[in-house]
Length: 130
Image 1 (cartoon, helix red, strand yellow):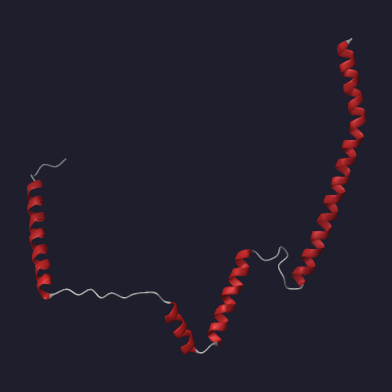
Image 2 (tube, rainbow, N blue to C red; image 1 turned 135 degrees about the vertical axis):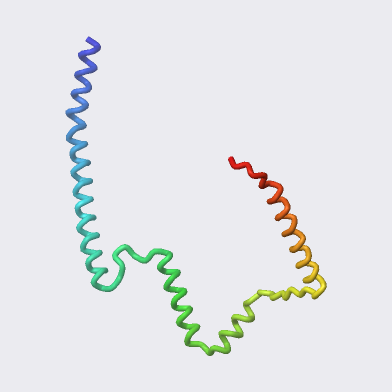
């Protein structure tokens, strides 16, 4: 008897809920079709007006801003631009200076190290090949 009641209530539940489920799916499908048509018409209108159908991305907005700044910089006085660049620059130039004596010592050290390498290569080369 318990099995019969369980099956009967499931059937009753399906009979009552099935029309509601179909109604919800039909309304959702109608909504999707309306949105599809709206977006298609909007995209065509925006495209022929010269815009981008999906709008500008943040990268595009930043690139347009940089291009506008470069155009304005071209139109400015070159001496002003140079002065602004120098004022904003924080680069320090350091000049390395070596005395002649230290340069001679460096070449002597290089020569002696080359001799060391030649000696080690000759010591390693005992004629055996692997």
